[in-house]
Amino acid sequence: MRSKSKINVYDPTSFLPRFMPSDELMGLMKAGYEKFLIVKLEDMYRHVTNAVPASRSLTHSCLYLTSGEANMKIGSESYTIHKDQMLFVPAGQVFSFGEKDVNKGYFCTFHEDILTGKFGGSELLKDFEFLQVWGNPRIVLPQQTSKFILQLFRRILHEYMQNGLNTPNIIQPYFIALLCEVNTAYQPVSASTQTMAVNITNRFKALLFAHIRSQHLVSDYAALLNISPNHLNKSVKAITGKSPTRWIDETIVLEAKVLLSQTRLSISEIATEVGIDDQSYFTRLFRKYEGATPSEFRARIEKS
Image 1 (cartoon, rainbow, N blue to C red):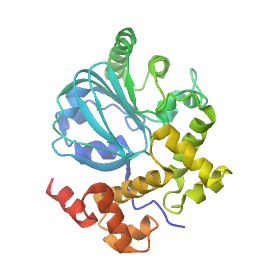
Image 2 (image 1 turned 30 degrees about the horizontal axis):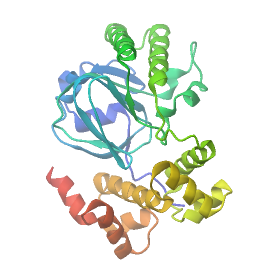
Image 3 (image 1 turned 120 degrees about the vertical axis):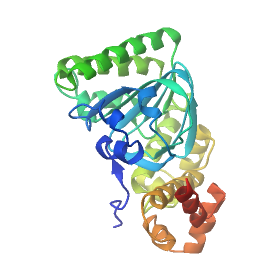
Image 4 (image 1 turned 90 degrees about the vertical axis):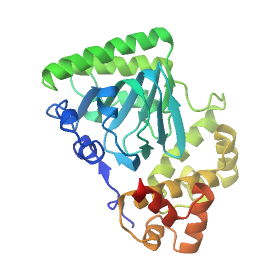
């Protein structure tokens, strides 16, 4: 069985020094910030001096804008948000972003543990689809909801700056309330009324996330879902507009981009890591979706 151990999966204690090396920024971090931290976006983002390549995090994270613009690639899709909008990156999902956005707002990263305890439990996670890898990461907030969320961010930031995580009985209920407010504005990726097709598509995406290193055929995923390949193809295409084959190809390329960004493995070794034994086929597949060979992609990263 192939291992994912060669890919760095960051927590804030390793991510911030790696991509935002700043004593000023680190001075805003409180004890336990690997589990929870909150900062004003403008206090963090100006320390991003280079583009952040494809990476993963052990924690969930979110951005909320009060002005400006933020651009981020999450999974295989690119997203842009503006005032009164949010982006969520689920733990383990691949993300990347550049260094030239100008914006204000709040950034928060949190471990699932912050939702469990006196005022919460693990069941809460099932209510927040935006924290699932197959959910919709971009949320447009109604004006009134945005005002409530802004108040909650301000209150949580004040408490965090004063006491860190020493007052969980204050931070946890406020943060759960914030996520519940977000949930009132959440819209699924597809507004389709085809409930069964949506369910199949979401399960397919979750399986894809877990098995992409070893399962590359539509029939593999159809078998895991106990449906026919034709049924899977029709369901996924109806909900997402893309075939399962394209989803599989894009996810293979996404895995390869992380390895190209974070390791010194050779191109043939990376092909093997993502489950492709034919390096020529791997190169063709990568170029088809990225417009560059794996070697060219790595060279671009090294120059940035």
